[in-house]
Each structure stands twice: as structure tokens, then as C-alpha cells.
Length: 161
Image (cartoon, rainbow, N blue to C red; front, top):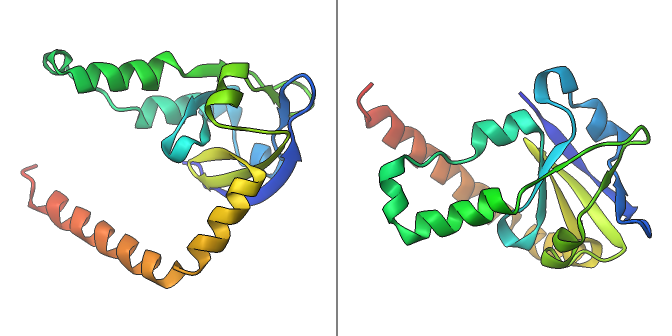
């Protein structure tokens, strides 16, 4: 199971390549997690990078009966249709597709964030503003997160096995 952490700052080079920090790369075992990343626009308009194994594990699976729902079809098109396999070169760089750069508002300077089971790539100034704003709410966020986790555990415990 992955446990990625940390905040790193890098530039996307002229060829749209981004160096994945060595500390993050060292935390990933390609034999277990697969090679490269699956890149997809995640929540909050941020580029998420998942290992292939993690992406398979966490990507929602909808049964065929739900295909009648336009929301399910639209979500699947975005979640899977826009996901791209990104290979890592010998220098630890990934080529960020131009459409992902545009959709996620990435400029030259980016923040690369280890977030437990995935990497997030933010436009640097946007990340820094987000951090400053959220740090003011740290305690409140922690309390809400713990409460949500407890509610989820309670619901899961009440489900039939």
C-alpha cells in the first residue's frame, strides 16, 4: 500500500516534462504498483497521478444497469476517457499531455504533492494560496475529517456481511 507524502516544487520544462521528485519515486515499487502513472484531472481541477495498480483499485466500477444514468456515463467518460498512461523516463520525468496542462491550469512552476495513494500536481501559486487559506482552518478540518471517518465506519459496521 502506498503512503506518499511531501511538498516539492519543480518546473515543467519546454517539452512539457515534469520531474517526479526522487523521494516520491523511491516510495513506489514498480514491480507491485506498475510502471509509470495514470494521469487524470482530479477534484478541484488538479492533475492526479496514480500508479496503474492504485488506479485500478480505486477507480469506481459501475455495473451495466447504471449505464442508463446519464450522470454515470458522463462521469465514466471523464474519469476513463481523459485518463492517460504516462511513462517515466530514466531521469524520472513524465511527459504531461498538453490537454492536461490546459485543463488543470498548469504553468511552468508547479507544486508536486504526495497525498497518501497518489500525487497531485498544482499550479504553484494556486497551491500556495490554498495552503495559506486552509492552514487557518486546520483544526476545524481535522475535526470534520475525523467525524466523517467515524460516520463512515458506523455505516460500514451496520451493513450486512
